[in-house]
Amino acid sequence: MKNIYILLVIFSIFTSCHRDYDKNVDTDTLPAATQTGARTGGAIIDGKVWVATKNYTNDGPGIHTYCEKIKDRTYIRIYLKGIKDNNSIYINYQVDHFELNKTYTITPNNGESDNTIYFSRSFDDIFYNNKYDCKLKITRLDLENQIVSGTFELKLNRYAGEEIINIVEGRFDKKF
Image (cartoon, rainbow, N blue to C red):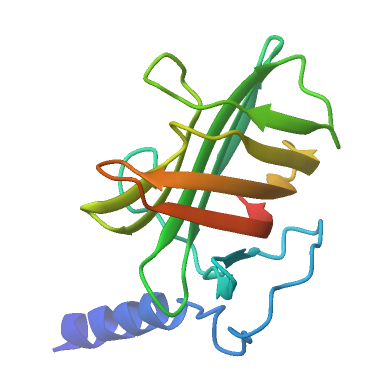
């Protein structure tokens, strides 16, 4: 009986540690463009405000925010998932001789580059950057404190079709 009690106490401690960072988030207003690791993200998608969850997300191998520098090459991976929906924005960008506050133009990816951008509404409803240029600006990259902040503008098209989605005023301030 004593062992069951101890297990229940341990279980309660671990399950109560989960924090819901989305509790008081206003989903009708874009979060401020901060650089503090505030776990925020959002954009205007086809004229409507979209706000990303502040909770940690890891939807599979390689599907999370992450940054690193190996020699002269910087790897930046941004993953944002909606609070009110399961829509997600994924930006994977690699660059040699990275410059902070520089706006990078990410050219269309036709399978010839490691740079990938997509917006997903579901597993089979995905928009890619295979026709239009996209913009990414990193305003803070702090590898020691694991913070990446920046802005983006994306024009993406449906993989199997002509439908276009416009994402403007994108911003993120993430811990990784």
